[in-house]
Image 1 (cartoon, rainbow over the protein chains, first blue to last red):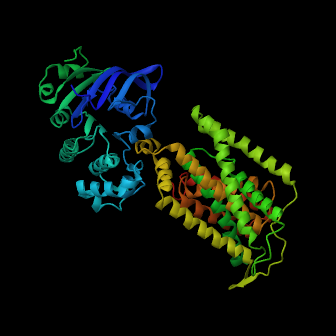
Image 2 (image 1 turned 45 degrees about the vertical axis):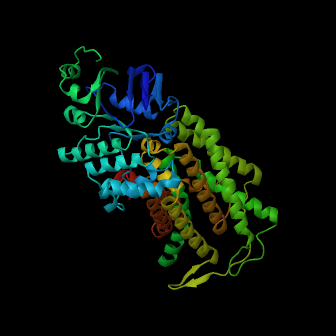
Image 3 (image 1 turned 120 degrees about the vertical axis):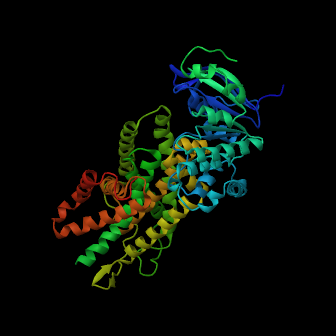
Length: 242
Length: 297
């Protein structure tokens, strides 16, 4: 069996040392795989993403990216090590232009920033058209695209997306999911928090359901979509890891 | 008379604007009101004076100006020394507090303490008497409208404009400027861009310290150097920053010019001794009528 790109073991994390939100989570993501992280509100999905990015306290367990331990690493070092993180809200700099947002995204790799910006414009032509516009002038869907393009500037091996379809029209959400599939096809592992279960699983290879800070279901997206335990997990009923 | 007051107001405002930029950078990036900032102007002014005294003056006066070419070297010394003092104050006082999760109020009190220490160190070394870079006589330049301006004052205005252009270039065309702007707007997102906020904070101290030194030296050149000059400028500086809108550099510049103009024009309706209350009244009006300032978001 090959080593997963991201391997999380017994992770305990949260905002206060005595109040963990993620309570012993173990999961993995392979290269070129899209994994949907699902679960009811307050399950700890966003906290888990922030723990991988070094933005919240980690009280226990390990987070390894290609074998490199990320626990204890400041966020800017974790990003430089190969993580791309797109937060759920406030995920673009509204006072910076599109091009400056991309330059900020490529801060860790100044020598390649021009080439990366050209790639971003090729992948998302809308950004090229609006390169001089401020981030705050974009629509919700356009901001999400910019946020993803910004996160790709360091050529991450793992992309963390926190609710990329939140607040988007179905059409805009489908465009974002299509972009995510394209990114994964290039070899990048994607861990994506999603509230829209159906659409999230349709865009993913695998789904993991988190309840009260730990995974209770983990399986191929196609089979998980029809799994009767899925709605029960969301309703808070006891289910067991597949 | 009004034209003369306007010109004098713009000259005062230019120095206030430079200092207000340092204040607004601190509010936006360091996220606290640094009441010690004005003392960096004093440190800068006196560091330049030390270089002048060590050299034995500023050299033979250049053209119509009151000072010689060595003042440029002294200014450079002031910029470097003040930037170092600013970074040292962060390392010794503010960074340890930040790492312990201190809130803005704790940082504000710490900045008050630091201000007292810096002011009294200057007082101990240089005494209470006013100091000058040069005592050479200048001939006033006569401008249209029967306005008289000293050549030094015109140079101060020109240097201020150059400093603003340099600052604009730094913030908009360098990696460091981008990092500072990103951290000012959204620190967690800046972290997610692999930008180290501590590095941006260090550069903020360097840039604001250098601006403070420049403002202090220009103030010393056109007025005089006194250990309490920073303390006296504190209220106009904060008023300019608040009036312009916290975090807005163009706002700080316009705020500085407006405060300078208002101070000088106030003598038309108020006794001169009340001039110092004008910034306070502007700040009060700003808090009551437009708390976000002219350009605040």
